[in-house]
Length: 177
Image 1 (spheres, rainbow, N blue to C red):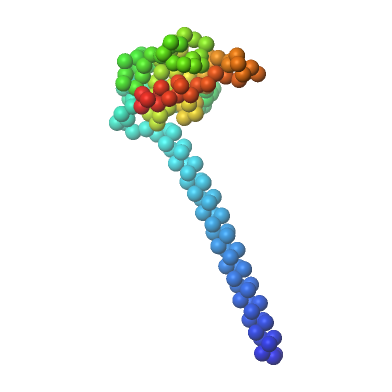
Image 2 (image 1 turned 135 degrees about the vertical axis):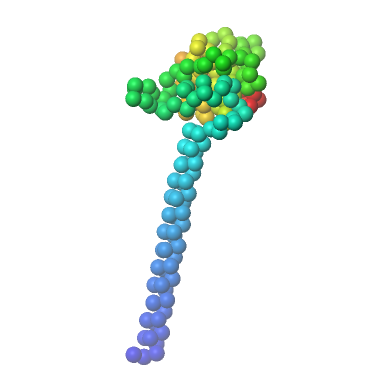
């Protein structure tokens, strides 16, 4: 073999090796992204389902709360996520993390009911109780409580079934946290 041919072969081998290393590096990054996504999802699920017993936002005793607050999304009895969550009597108004709000206290008023109990649950979950049912107002709370669709008013100015802006209620609820 001539020196030129040897050089070309060694150059091809070097290029092939660099390409293999680049491919391995890309696959390694891809696996890290996938692994990171799985870890993030697992962490979010853990945070959504676990709370510490010394939870400073708890408005009811831990023993009374456990039965309704941390139940699984579905049970053997056939209950589903979004079903009304019973509110223990100890969770009535008067907690530092809850207050009664009405049509006159918040503008715009997004509900069809005149008033209700606004709460901030642990993890900044804003809920609104009306008619004995506690609804999840923000996205964090809607993973556990039903959406307020039955009592959420349609916006007459927008039409097409679009709802009244609920951000004032969310902000008032977050202020209770």
